[in-house]
Image (cartoon, rainbow over the protein chains, first blue to last red):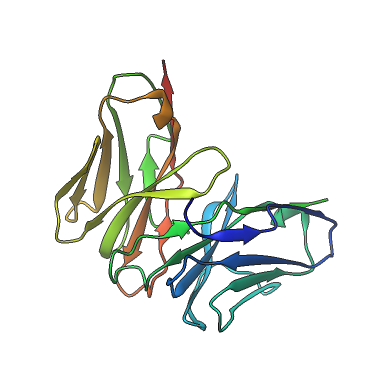
Amino acid sequence: DSGVTQTPKHLITATGQRVTLRCSPRSGDLSVYWYQQSLDQGLQFLIQYYNGEERAKGNILERFSAQQFPDLHSELNLSSLELGDSALYFCASSVGLAGVGTGELFFGEGSRLTVL
Amino acid sequence: SQQGEEDPQALSIQEGENATMNCSYKTSINNLQWYRQNSGRGLVHLILIRSNEREKHSGRLRVTLDTSKKSSSLLITASRAADTASYFCATDAIGSWGKLQFGAGTQVVVTP
């Protein structure tokens, strides 16, 4: 158990809909990362937050948004869903920014999104 | 685009054999990390090697880093069936502000 909790574990929805994925980081971790894993794109970095502030942005679509709340949990919002958004979405947390301290990321078990 | 590229894409070995996989990357790094993922599960951190280190060991794992060639290797000695998983390298590039980039992974199957 990594200590990172993601909900829901599975989600099936229709095209055009909007979903929210939630992540609770490990106790004490200030950084939260979101990754998308699909068969054709591999593991893609989406966005990173550190102590409530956005710190790094990757290949995140404009239809997607995220935030980190004062209690450090994070939510990833996916809107106007398309078939191609079907993927496994991972949240990870770390003590600080990668490269500072251990740099080790602790991953949750992921939220599997299926868009029909 | 992905920073790291693993080679081979897939590897099939028998229990007791060693498994070696390689990772090449493009830019200068702060550190390089290896992770394991069992099918459909979350990734698990294995080992981190900093840019000023050349080799690191952790149990049956040995990681090397050659910054001049921008490459790293992961060796798993005396493989077990439980080592069956996908293995990913991830790079913390200088100036990336925490954007840890993962490669496509090497799928390892260890047969009893």
